[in-house]
Length: 321
Image (cartoon, rainbow, N blue to C red; front, side):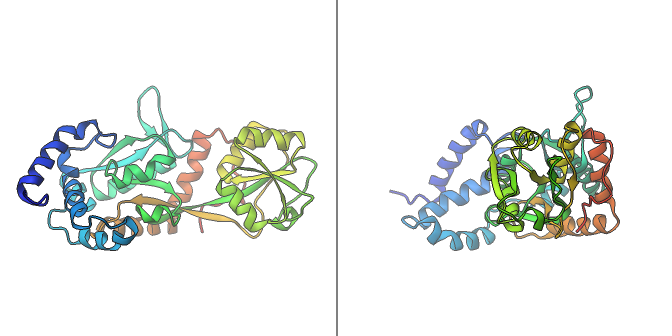
């Protein structure tokens, strides 16, 4: 019996995946040849490390993939070869918005991606995905070349890489009219009830900056707004984008605050993990250049007014470090 790694057996496996590839959920917009190196590497590795757990074999697999002779093009090579840069989009104001009349995409992160493509002198191709939760899969499977607005969490960094930051997003508070908190210390009291979304970054940041506050947890932002408006909670904390939209649509809410110390997390480009550093290096320098010149700050604020229905942005709001 021939060993499964020999040419004949790989040819049989190759034929199977070439036939069945179009039915895979990640196949949209790509050809089988784009994924063929990964299929072959998986086929060969399954035999080479048969009987070993993923945790035990992971470092060997990473080393082997970096040296793999049949590995395909890097992202940089692919972009230069095709003349296209594929960017993940979905409806989420003010980052991504699709004009229903023209089908054109706009938004703060779309404008950033357009400038990246212009600098590279390639065409920007919008690839629609299902939302934030699908970005890691879309990047790691090669459905898109990059995404934007991602937080570089340790867990995500095991699957994809990041470049940037491209902006910083602040966490702010919105009070009930009868509560006058302005800094995190004002909320850091068991007598103060702060509404947060369960399992969110909002909750984690509240636990860091006001750990003594009494949390009132909800699943939806609309529930949080109602709780604060009705007095069941003294305040809520979330990103500056969500809070400004909530305040604009619910004038009965109290003051909008940027508490001290400032709480802000960076947003990044998400990209594939690969040995060729050229695409990551380009994005890193693009981000630094556009941040220092104020272009990304401008793009964020312009998009907030254009796509989120916000009439005025407080002077305290910043998207820089």
